[in-house]
Image (tube, rainbow, N blue to C red; front, side, top):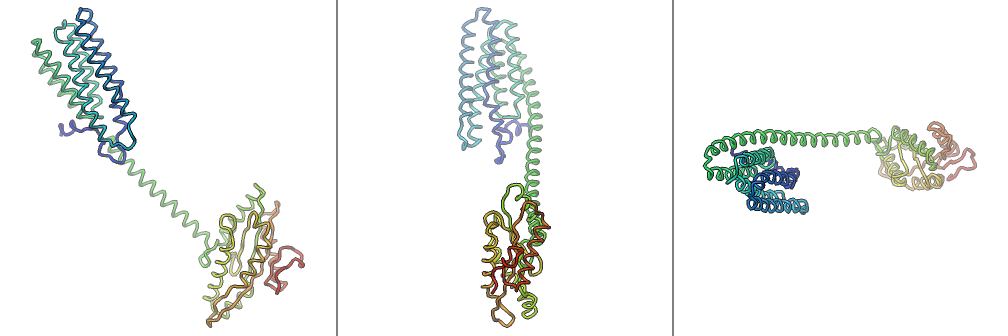
Length: 397
């Protein structure tokens, strides 16, 4: 289990829905390598003061090359193409890590070998700091981190053995063991975090889907609540809501508004003679005609109640409301309606038209349209009344 966790290439790499690109951005960053280079160069101060300038020069060259290589890696990662896979950059990071470990270990070993006791203590302290900081990033890329730690400690140990300091071997082995257990704990903690985030994403996605379904169900319920089951038009509830809304819009924007109340002439006589099924089919046929005549984005056709229908017109249609009503009356008169005995019949409609005024509310506009509908019916039906004066009746046969 220990080795399994320490040999992971990068945590979360198997998550195709959310690849850990942010982890790679941290791993490719040049900043930690600049800090490590400064620390090692600081350890070179004593050897330089002791006159070991050649040794310090070699270390400087190694560090410059290592930092330059990591700077190139950082630049290349930032300029990567969007379509490139995560695995490609994980695989590229491994050799970069090996080079960094070799460079750090070699530079520290050069400074350690032949150095004064004070220099060796400083070198070991810097090496421990670099190895410890690498272990702290183990949750990002366990395998590469472990390789860097092993390489650095192995090279420094080799330098210590060459100086006859064998006690460094068990000390470094214990230190690496401690770091390994520390790394495993870090990895386990981050795996729990990743698992929690994945679970959260699943729950959030499920919640979003549930909300979408709930919104869809509410919209469908809202449509059903406003739809007349027989004709498919807006029902009285939907009509009342739209009329109120359109009147508010008219007062805010000045857009013209007109209301048509339509009554099917002698419908009860037709229903009694041909049966309720024929009557229902008659209403559906007229409803389809109304729906086809109105503009869906601006106008509303509704079943007002029984054999009565209503149309709300806005903008240009509202201005030409009387002409629209007359065309509607003529279209209904041309309908062929099936009867009980299989023959065809015709029906007519009477229409009352009211143009909304700024002072109108729902009640006054409906009352005016209803009054004109009554006048149309009183004058013999099959006609349009768009005024309170009888001489403005149109469409009588």
